[in-house]
Figure 1 (tube, helix red, strand yellow):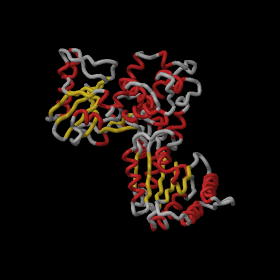
Figure 2: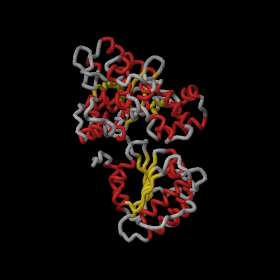
Figure 3: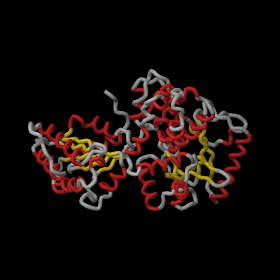
Figure 4: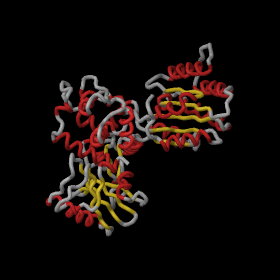
Length: 468
């Protein structure tokens, strides 16, 4: 049986809901394949009072038919149940639940709830009535709704201005695994991979459990990548279209935004995205918001600029890998990765992707720098003369200017590079007009090689620090 990795805070919150003295309506969201269903099934599968999974692209009648069959199984009815609409469905669910004699919470699990809400189905209105007229009058109902379409959960449930307004009692956003959790996952599956290899694994999988489960320990990482991404019918070769189409209506426009960001390693402003994609106004705002809520992109404010000038970067590792390699690969080269290891193309990609890994592990970086208890703002910075991978602006009037380097050995700082770092500090201070103390920080795989010019590095973070 597969071990449950991490998720300690989420489990604690769910346990508090289970022990509370009121009925609980819990929303669990997160990127597709991140493990929402696995978490709930692992914790409660043997204790569900009722569960139903929405079917993708099914009609309302088909959804109701499947819901009725689930009700029949839970009620152990020998007679086929017929449902006229969702109000009827929830009424019959209510009648069934009232006959369960138990003092513990009755756990209802609606998986992929956004898929249930087909056009003109009135599903949300029926759910509202069920919750307001019956469930909230009790203290023994725990309704858990999940879905990868985070925008639907937000618009239809969390920010509902009708009958479900302020009715959601708990929201849990499930994030991808950290490097430490990926290491724990691989260890639990008897992979004997070092941390350098695990970081390379993260560059493709992004800590998504479903993708990690595809790896085979009998293969090396390179062989796994070839098998999953470049072999005919490779599982991750076929993943891309389904990933976006199941999450977003107008998926082609979302892909257009993701593609534009994939081609700008330093990120883009909203205006640049609009100019490139020709998606304008509120439509672009909504799409950027949805992509960020679904963990596909991240945004950073720029020091000294207003919020609308923040930088957007594509942060979904699989999408980045797909655009960079899978989409452009020769369909007849099933060993592309093994044949191109250590080429400039792959080495450059690894360096850029390591930057994103660091941006998603800010907590670990702060801990390594001994500033975990200090309020900070993490940003990117660039102008026409220079750019900085990561800027950590601290409330103690210190700014860490972070240089991120991925290498197979200790990083060597040459005289030219040390001069470039000093020049960049001057440009940054002049452009931002900051009077705060600037500290050059290097985030590397194995640290800085100590020699004549290494003193330009005033603090450092290594690969092991990211695994905390």
